[in-house]
Every structure is written in C-alpha cells, then in structure tokens.
Amino acid sequence: MLIYLSLPRKLSGLMSKSNFININFINWEKHINHGLILVDFWAPWCNACKAQDKIYDEIAQIFPNELRIGKIDVSDNRVLADKFGVRNIPFLILIKNEEQILQMPGIESKEYLISQIKKNIQ
Image 1: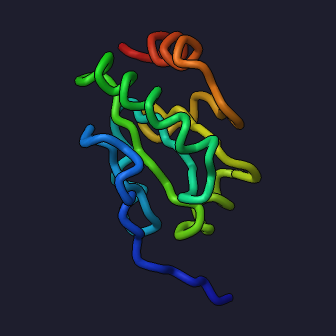
Image 2 (image 1 turned 60 degrees about the vertical axis):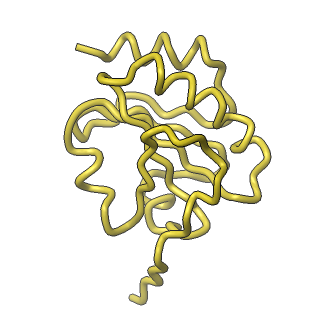
C-alpha cells in the first residue's frame, strides 16, 4: 500500500490571525486528544469554505479558552479526509477528548455552531 504524504500548505491568508490550528497527517492526533475542537475540512478552491471562515473567526472570539478551531486542507490531507468520511466540503466535526461529538456536512449557521459548542463545554 502506497500512501502519498505532502507537506502541509500554508493557509494562505484565508483566515484572520486567530489561533486556528493547521492540522495535517503528521500532527492530527496531538490536536484532537484533549479538549473541545471544531475541525473544518476545507480546500483553497472552495468558495463555500472561504465564506465560513468569518464565522469561525467570530466563534473563536466567543470561546477563546473553551474551544480550538482546526483546519484540514483536503487537497493535502486526503488520508485524513478518508479517515473521517469526508465526501464534500465544507465538512465540520466537533471533537471532544478524541471522541467525535457531531459531524456537520455543508454550511452551518453561526447560531447553530454556537449552540452545539455550548452543549459540549464542561
């Protein structure tokens, strides 16, 4: 079995200078093993993904200590996309201490995301 791994691409200015985490095949396990993290599967060519970034910025400001937001570029991380069953993007997964709490394919509203995050904050 041959697995192609590429070096992670920079997030190329699609997001503000918030503390978003660039997750890739090499570092993904360390980022999902503790606390609450919203993982966004995206791609640079995905206009819907780019549109959601503003919402993620706002959510990061609302939950600065309770939530981390990670971004996985599916163009560079096909293995992770397959592992999590991502077929279309944007695709969000809310993970708490390594356990998938919720999968959200497609675009989600800020209000819905906030309600789901609040349900899972201790």
